[in-house]
Length: 358
Image (cartoon, rainbow, N blue to C red; front, top):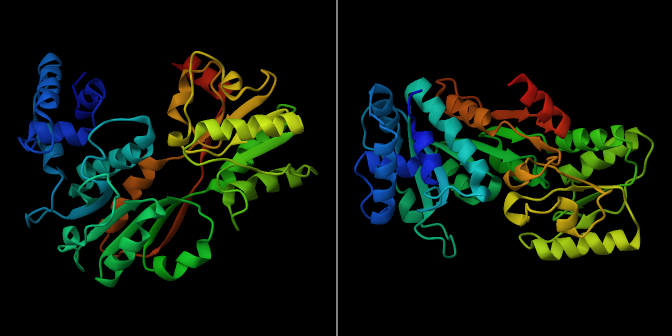
C-alpha cells in the first residue's frame, strides 16, 4: 500500500497541511523544530517517497497567497494561522472539508490556498490586511456562517463565494447576503426527523431534546424533532436549553430535568467541542442517568466511537460537499443557488452490519 500524506498526518497527529509544509521546506516559522523532527522521523519510518502523486498534491496545497502560475486557486478561510496544524476532535468537521477540497484539487487541477483571517487565536479578530488580494478573480470557500461578515465584503469586491454550512435559524435574515453565493447546506431538519423516528421505532415515547439553541425561531433540529413526534400523534417535551462549551453545566441541566420528570430517551444536539466524555464508563453514567435511558446525538461525535454500543447519530457528507463546492467555484458557468444534503443515520445496528461485511 502506498504511503499517503493522510497516513503520515494521522500517525503524527497533525494536519495534512503541516505535513505538506514540512515536505515542501515551508515549515520555518510555522511549525516547531520538535514537530518537524517528529514528522520527518515518521516520513522516514514509513518510507514515504515524493512520487508524481506526492508532487501533484504539494502543487495543489499552499498556505499563503499564491503566485500567478496559471493554475486556478480556491481560497479556503480558516480562523487563525495554526488552526489546522494539530489534529484534534473538535475540528474533525473542518478536516473533512479540507479533505474534500484537496480531492477536488487533485481531480480538477486547482490550488487550495488556506487564508487565516487572524494571525493568532487570541480574539480571532479579522485582519483585513490579509485580504488585500481578494478581488473579482477570487474563488472563496468557507465552512459555517461564522464567516458571513467577511464573505459579505468579498462579495462586494466581486469574488465568487461557496459556503458550506448547517441549516441555520434566522435563515431569512441572511438571504440578502447569500443570494449570489453557491450554498451547500446540511439538512438538519431531516437528520432530527431520522433520529426521532429511530427512537420511536425502538419503542421510546418519552423523548427529550437538549440543545444550546432552544427557543431560537426556525431552529431546524427542534423543528425536525417536533415534526417527527407530531407525525406519530405525540407532543414534544419541553426542549432543554443546554450550555454551549460547558459539559458540566449541560449534565446538571439534563439530570435536573430527569429528576423533575423521567424520560426514556434523550437527543443531544451538541457540537463535539461541547462534550467531554469519560469513555471508561457508559454515556448514561457520564450524565448521571440510569442505564435504561437511551442517549443519542444529532451528529456523529468522534468521542462517542469508543462506547459499545456506540450511541446513534447522524453523519453528514461534508467531504462530498467540499468537493462539490470547489467544483462549483471552478465551473465557467458559475450559478448561485443552494444544494441540500441529507445525513445518514448511524446506529449500533448499522455499524454491526458494516463490520460483518468487512
